[in-house]
Picture 1 (tube, helix red, strand yellow):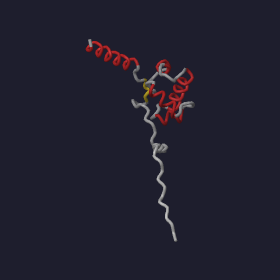
Picture 2: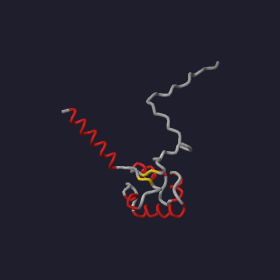
Picture 3: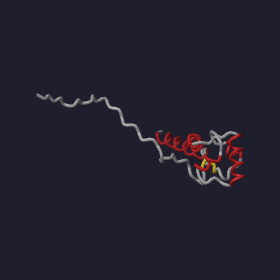
Picture 4: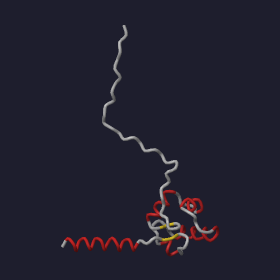
Length: 118
């Protein structure tokens, strides 16, 4: 019984992966672009027009610079939805990123020892 459940779960995962195939921005038509979560008809038209006017997109930064309404947050969403540029998913920028906040602790601060002068 356990083997059947594991086989069913594995099959489901494989089917889900096949259903969400990557959409290459530089070769996709409007219908393929529209199938990506987060891309509607207006955005897909803007992508196609920009690609026709100025050529293929080099990377995610190029897409963000050339297509109005596509920024860092939207790029991450589109990449998660299956969009790729030259076979690459979006990689979050690390340059200029804010440093992580230090972890909060419940420790009480230690007071410096008091000294008396006579």
